[in-house]
Amino acid sequence: MNPQAKLIFMISLLLGTTITISSNHWIMAWAGLEINTLAILPLISKSHHPRSIEAATKYFLTQSAASALVLFSSMTNAWHTGQWDITQLSHPTSSLILTSAIAMKLGLVPFHFWFPEVLQGSPLSTGLLLSTIMKLPPITLLYMTSPSLNPTLLTTLAILSAAIGGWMGLNQTQIRKILAFSSISHLGWMAIIIIYNPKLTLLNFYLYTMMTATVFLALNSIKVLKLSTLMTAWTKVPSLNAMLLLTLLSLAGLPPLTGFLPKWLIIQELTKQEMIPAATLMSLLSLLSLYFYLRLAYCTTITLPPHTTNHMKQWRTNKSTNILVAILATMSITLLPISPLIIATM
Image 1 (cartoon, rainbow, N blue to C red):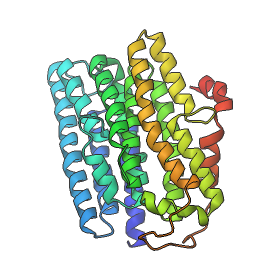
Image 2: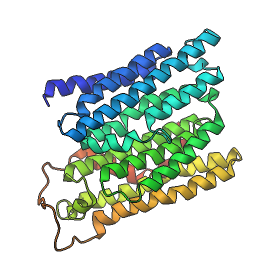
Image 3: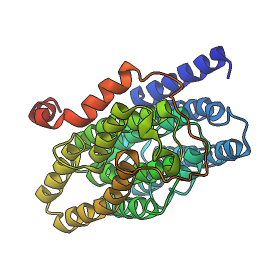
Image 4: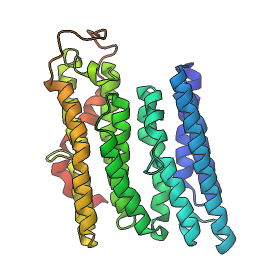
């Protein structure tokens, strides 16, 4: 892709995200979401492969439907209350439609079907954008409207997301699909706590973004897309593979790594809210995700490749591991000891 075109699309992405997260008026938020959608489409379909074109088409259709629902929800609210302010979403029907629209934007169950397919058809760099920065505007809208959302609906969506995200990731061999189901599962953890402690949702999102960025950049560095090629990747950059192993375990939420912090705080908050069954169910469902993270980790460092493999071996990486991966990996692994400081700044 032309560097100037890529720069324009990246600037548009940042502009759309900034407009949505800083707006008070529904129309401005909607405009930001539209700019985002239009800017990411060329980045998804830049390889001109039929799968990429299919991914871009699916992405466009689902995001357009979600944007239409956002507009419909805000207009219904304005019709009944005379308010266009995002924080004044007081009409129950509007909040119900908005929850569905944001679930569709994010890829929460039952609106999750597009996300693994789109991620599978995108390059790893675009997959990173789809999993991180593209989730920020919808989560911001949820954050701003959290007092008026329906707790039962969100808890149901969250538990279903954690269950399906874990369950459907079990038998995948494509790494991008595994990361897509991992994202759906993490979104369940964010959605369950948004009403009771919205700042905790943002903390979870920031830490998830950091860990996912580490995984995507590491995979991009060693040019790996399938589990079978991941088995031979340890010969290329052993140190990077060791970092990838620890980051995957952190994503799974194992102590004493960074990923344990949001899960621990969310379970603590749910217990305070007397939602013991929900907390227990979420904890049990995270074991499903743990299985496929362990599978990825096992393929990354522990498995020796078979003597006969049906793919070309790449003996060296195309680019050197940059300082960004090193910084992100360190933060993805070592932030748990300073958790009191992180909690104090919330």
